[in-house]
Length: 308
Image (cartoon, rainbow, N blue to C red; front, side):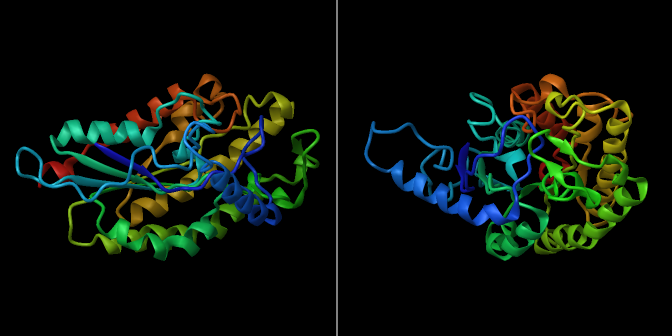
């Protein structure tokens, strides 16, 4: 199994849901580039950085021992599928775990290209970059999309019109987080999700493909730094219910299977803390969280590729 990573690495803030202010993103990306250059000073000078490939890029693999060519798995999205070592030291990401299972199920080698980014990537950002990924996605036998996190209204600078207070790690006026805001903010992104899933599915039209996407777990419930009241926790559930319902409806309309990470992490009613399923930053999946997401992906089966 060959595994390549081409995403970028920009540190997220600790101990709160991942939020990167748009005004800082360009500067942070530039800083990441400088860090990449510094990491090339010479062998032994610095540890390998997370944005370096996990294995040397290789030409497309030839046929397997059975004479069948390798399958291509491509992942796109934000830092949730990226699995940076600074977020979860020593963890095996769910994309890599899924690739191993795909290889075992099909008895074919798998070439994995994880194009997800640790840049605070939002859905509009991914849509702007999507044409660049067309060659990879057009030739992919299995595709995993994970772009549910940063565009959620609770990760905006002014969720539902109230500022996020960096000092208290919570919103200044929770009364503004209403059912109406939850529904409106989800609806605002429906057309872009439709275009994302529809475009990718069209690029693979007529060919057997596993198309998977994940929704968003609630990393506000149990966030100690935010000191949420019971009422405020319920408000975050309204937002996640509307958001995840919209994502899954859009995905399924365009031939994707929506993997329900939300209820796996937060319980059948979305009311439970994800606890140890999150890493120390309480944003990204822990090793056990990655294992659970991989299990959810694997449980959807590999039928389109088993028939080939």
